[in-house]
Figure (cartoon, rainbow, N blue to C red):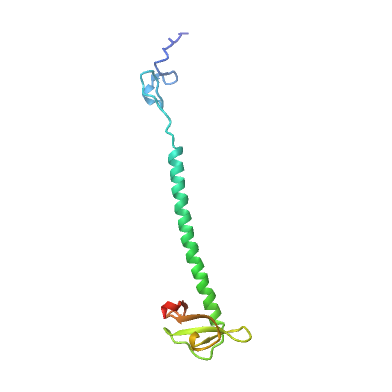
Length: 139
């Protein structure tokens, strides 16, 4: 039985393959090799997490604003389409929504400054048959 000669620590020898494999190692194998340091990614991660969180928050707020506007539009359309009126509204014309004595909504062509009814808002019927709320300065 032949005894294998022990190699010095600085020489990397794989006894199973009986080859020198220092160049194949993912780490430094001798004192003269450059020091391998683990990159500190915590600062990079924290900065990017903050950026991503801000982007997600901004997008969420944008979507919430759109959702709120859509729900407001839905509520007005639901209110107007369930209101009383005895005429066929014309696209592009402005109509006024009021409450009667029984608190029921009704649609009228009479402007708020021409009457003393409880005014709920002024609306224009668009080409998609959706009611758009008109602000006072939009007239």
